[in-house]
Image (cartoon, one colour):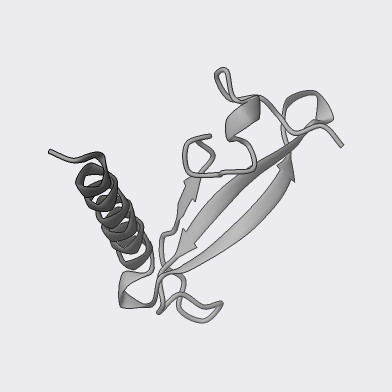
Length: 87
């Protein structure tokens, strides 16, 4: 198979994968927010919180806090495993 064909297939797969990830994370109005909080030894930690669309102060709903490095691109280079942010 020619290199251009392989490159085109790879580009399409990357694009489709990115679109799938976007729509999976934001389906049904899920809101994603970046949160920072004080962790062990007072270090600032960073995570993403996934909030259901129907959650409010009057109608609380469970959310998901993701502090893994894989889903937070700005932390990925620092993770080995999870490392707190330095400011």
